[in-house]
Structure formats: structure tokens, C-alpha cells
Length: 432
Image (cartoon, helix red, strand yellow):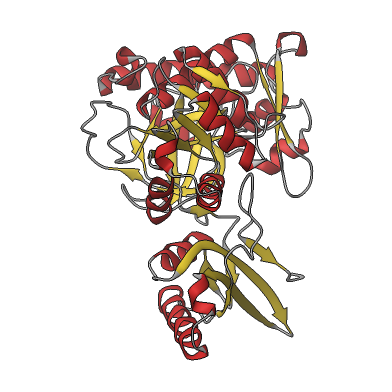
């Protein structure tokens, strides 16, 4: 099932011709209208006319989140404000937010791209889509909203929070597709069980989740608790919001909308391209954005480009699900540790609940990591010996997989705070 089959199933040669034409147009736009890029290009002795093939992309400088903040709020806009019909901003945890803008054409294009992702995930005009993202400056809710309306689906802008009410809406309004972060979907599943409501009492069929990394084990947990087929989708505010890529129902990688985004995967330290199929940092160049074009934007998201083709028939390249971020990476005693690694291990250990938190402290010159793990209630009513055995098992497994010692503390179910947005997995108390 496709939204735009003529564009989603393009011949590779035809697609690359579209990409090079759109790249040349975008580079001309930013050179003429964005002083930041004009200065960067001039420093390299580079002109947009110098681009003759897609391979020339590697000659261009990267754009980083720091560049966006230094040009806050409108310094990277390529159109005057009278042409900007929407402004969004990402919720930066440090420093200034990054501000992005959309022209009327950008909004139309955004709606179409999200419609592609939703259609690939099973949504049709007959669905009732409940959006449990927070509405506001965050791009996720509005992007999905536009795409679902573009398809013709019925949209419930439930926003985030008040999980019991979300469930009541699902029951009463007969929601068939839930859109949220995966951690919030898990909270919905847990709340359903607490309320004694079977998943069969809902009309849910599909879940489309994004905005944070999640594992296949977490997918299975969500599907089991909600009785749905769950797909992953990817986007980021600085590039457009949702709509960059998404899984189809084959779930063999996320299909990239390559006619609108040029993607590279680089080594985050050397900044050189990685070998085909190797994991690295995703870099995106927008090809059709008018108000806020991005050239070689370093997303900090870790993924890899997948070989081969998908049985669904889409011809664009696919990316693996994001496993983590280079700036979420913890360096513990010289070892790189990602929260997603810890999550993957915990999900494989029987008796653990799908909720955890990583606390990092510094004692003297040494880092100390404690993983708080929720476990089944029965374990706390069992012998202390069983608790210690489980703690030792988790600790040994983490040490073996991560290559560094971490302490483990078992906590009772519902001890760790639940998130209605992105889960806060790491508390870093170090003063580095």
C-alpha cells in the first residue's frame, strides 16, 4: 500500500537525477539567501555551480546544532518572514532551542511525506488516529496530524498526558491507530492492565511510534500489551519533523524519502563515510525545503543503511532503526556505553519489567554507574537469595556485554517515574 507510488517506487537512475537537480537548486538557494552558508562556501572556494554529481556533496561543510543556536532565531532562514507560515522549535536540553520555519509549500510537502509514512504503517482513510504527542512547538504532533488529515483519516488530537483519559478516548471514539513515543505506548499498556481492561476491548490495530530509540524487545512488549502491529518512524525538527523515513508493514528497515532527503552515514569521530552496512552517524541534506534548508546536517543519530530491497516494492534506501545518539553516549571509565545497549540486555532477562534508569555518579576520579531495574512484584516477596541471584545475573550480563562494571539495584514495579513524552533514561550527576 503506497501513498505516492510513482515517487516511492522510482527507478534508481531516475531518483538520482531528481536528487542532483534538487541539490543544485537547494545549494543555489542557500548561497543566495543564507549568509551563514555563503560565508562557508566562499571560505572553501566552492560555488553551487561546481556540483556535477552527488559525489560532490562530500566537499561541502557540515551543519551542526551549534550552528543553529549561533544563528538563533531566524539566521538560517532562506526566505523572508512574510513567507513563513509556521514556526516550530526543538526542545533543547541545554542552551537555546533550535528554531525552524515552514513556507506554505513546505507544509504541503510535509503533509505528503507524513502521509507516505502513515500509509506504509497501515493507516488508511478509514482509520481513527489518536495523536498522543504534545501539541506546541514540538514538530511531532502537528506533522502527524497533517499527514493523517491528508490521507483522509479521522484525527483525534488528544495531545500527551492523562493516560486514563487517553484510554477512555480510545474506547469511546474507537481509535484504530495510536501515535506516540514508544515509552508512552508502554505506559498506556501498563495502565490498561492496572485498570483491568483487556486490549481486546479496544479497536486499536496499529501503533506508529517515534521520537526516541527503542528495541525490538520493547516493540514485542508494546504489541503484546496493546494487541497491535507497531512500526517505527523517524524524523527530527531541524530537518522537517516526522516524515524523513518510516517502516512499512514488512518491518525490514525504515524507508527513506530519498526524493526529499539526501542521506549519508559517517564515522562520528573521523567524519568520513563508513563502509556500506556499517553503523555510523546519520547526516541529512534537505532537497525541497524552502524556508529552512539544511546542508549536511549532523543528526547525532546512530543508524546504518541496509542492503538489498524490501518485499513491499519501495525502491528508496532503508535505514535501520536508530540505536542511540552520539551525544547520548556515556563514556564510563573510557568505555562507550549507550542506554539502548542496556535496554536490550534487560529485556532478555526474565523477571524484569520494561522500565529502567541509569544513574551516573563520580566518586573521586572514578565513574560509578547504577542501573535501577524494575522487577516483578513476586521477586520482592520471595527469599532474599532470589533477589541477590537476579541482581548478580543482571550485573554479570551487563559487565560482559558492555565491557565495564555497573552496579544494579532492583526496585519494585511502578517505582520509576513514567514519562508521557520521551523517557528520561539517564541521570548523569557527574560534574565533568
